Length: 257
Length: 280
Image 1 (tube, helix red, strand yellow):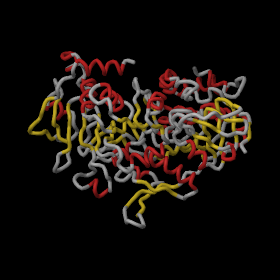
Image 2 (cartoon, helix red, strand yellow; image 1 turned 90 degrees about the horizontal axis):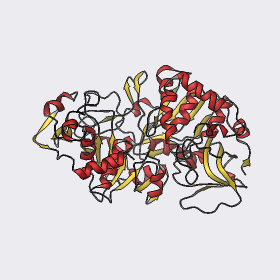
Image 3 (cartoon, chains in turn yellow, purple; image 1 turned 120 degrees about the horizontal axis):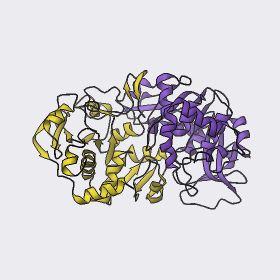
Image 4 (spheres, rainbow over the protein chains, first blue to last red; image 1 turned 30 degrees about the vertical axis):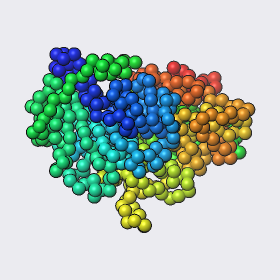
């Protein structure tokens, strides 16, 4: 949608594929990851198929340690229950596993994101008279609050990277330094945002998302033009390694079955 | 003791206009056959409660059964949007729909409080979100022991809860397995309850991960083979993912939605649950 067809046509992969692969690389072997449906689920399953076969996937339907052989059609796909280490109830997954901080990574998508990595998945426009009614919160507010760290995957353009969210569905760094502590959110908050342009991380001092890496073919100008606020760029900006042949092959095998 | 009755009679007796009704099933075991019977019996002004409205409530909302929706995630799972839900929220079609919006954790805990006979539940949730401003049933509460600020949500006690399970025995004991979501809590929180099942058997052979609801904890059991279609019933049939994708087109437009519902759901069929098979 954004840079697809530019880098993609030249380099042999799409910007969405680069984004998903870059996100999968963020998932460390041996950790547990609470997975939202859509792009997070694709990236998490790619991580399992490549460098992190022991990544424990947690789905909010109550599947702990699911090891699906194909992409699940939904967060409650039967293949998740069939392959899970344990299948538990929904109250249990939220109260016993997520809330006390037992899960390392919360992996979320977003319709809108602001500079403090707060997320909107509720409405575009006014709440009472929305322009677009989005699905809503699901498990996200508590995943964003209680996982040890958050990873967010979102396509970067002026509609998604906004100066001000129409609705705060899930809290990243709130209004800046100290917000999470004041709100009593126990997790460390979002540590990485992966887009189709690059990778952003919160600044250690002011918590603002800062561009730290660019995907092949993307530019700082493009990243700045795709944000609704003056985007901070790291002095030691790096380049994302291009997809390997294995990563591309595994990703395409997942998404075409 | 639960009564073994027809789906028609169960809905006629247990589901009333104006009821607060939960029809649960987290992607799995969604009680579509029962919802279609509610639609055929033209129930109105229902307060529909469910974590994920899914196609089941999209159909009921589009057919004008609901005046209010209490929910936490309103999409077509793995596909996209719920167009009838969106049309009702943004345009009031066919009737205005009030929404009461939560998170999954909040909704799950509301059922837990309801099932536990408590007035509210406590969780670490919602803090810093705009849900706290928009939803009256979310409030801050201070822990009397530590002074920590937490969040309270009121118990959910539906007038009637409806779920679908794999099996019942002839005494009306219920057995389900696979992803069982919040169904046990939804049933135990409700004033009245109906369980539809794939089959009725002499003995409930144990299954790993099973949840059993004793017959004396529910009001009625109705046989509804294929009653979770187009969702799935673990051990019986897979999700009809093609239908979830087709729903995107069927439901996008008011006329095509109404025509589909009239042809497949409203027009009488030979037996309870028969209409759901027409969808495949």
